[in-house]
Structure formats: structure tokens, C-alpha cells
Length: 163
Image 1 (cartoon, helix red, strand yellow):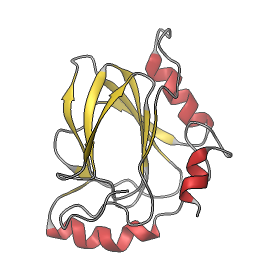
Image 2 (tube, helix red, strand yellow):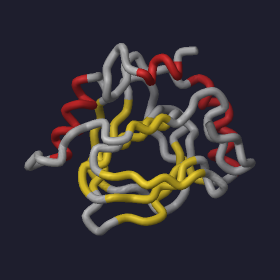
Image 3 (tube, one colour):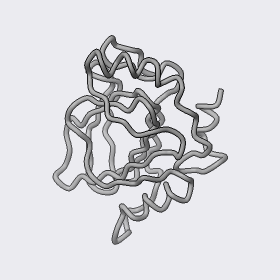
Image 4 (cartoon, one colour):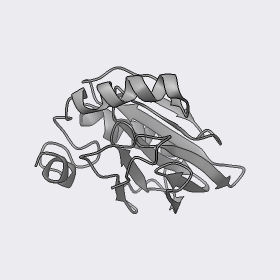
């Protein structure tokens, strides 16, 4: 859980969930496809392949999942005063709407696969009063996902987020 730091709202009710070595894709010819297939199989779509922005940002109208397909990264979650975590191939981070995040360090070969649940609408917010005021209204209204992006309808995410 990350508190509102006055700049990045984070999520007042839902924790960041990180699954270490959740998806075995080390031997895959195309590890990003392995991760995409897992996410899609569990209803998380809109998959993209890229890195993570180096500036703090968040999504106020949708939850997001990030899977590491190649390389390693140190990612700070929770905004400027948040926690930095080292992520490697097969790790997955599930970010509730409002969770600030940015890349601090990465290997040159870093490849992230991201996706979103069907409920919600993609937006990109940065620190600033206009995004923040809108986000404080929209974050609590973001629907909870019906499935865990890695473990499906009975996954631990649902137990943690459906209190």
C-alpha cells in the first residue's frame, strides 16, 4: 500500500501486488508472447510491449499489469517517496489504479509486456494539480478486475483486492 503523497494519489484501498518468477518464459524463443498469452487467457487485454517511462506516472481510470519478458529493471512504485523494487524475467507487478511508477534503472535489453482488465479506461497521468484532482474522483470508481492476470479467477489478487 502506498499513501497519497500530496502529488501522486496512489490507491487508498488496494495494494500493489508483485509475483516473483510468476511466468516461466526463460526458455521461450519469444518470451513476450508467453506473457501476453497468460494475460490474455485471463482476460487482461490491450497488451503492449515496451519499457517503463523514466518519469513518475499513473493511471487513474484503469488497473495495469506489467510482466518482465527480457532484462532487469529497478522500478519505483508509489511516487517520488515510494519503494524501489528490482524486477527480472518472469516477474509480474499488478498496479491498482492510481499507483505511481517509474523506471529508475534498466538493462539495455529490458522488455515489458503490459495489459489491462476489460473494466476501466486507459489514461496517463503525471504529477500536477489538474491530473490529481480528476484522479482523486476517478480512482475509487475503477471497477475491480474479475480475474487475476496470472492465476485466473481463483488467483490471490482477487482475495487481496475483493475485501
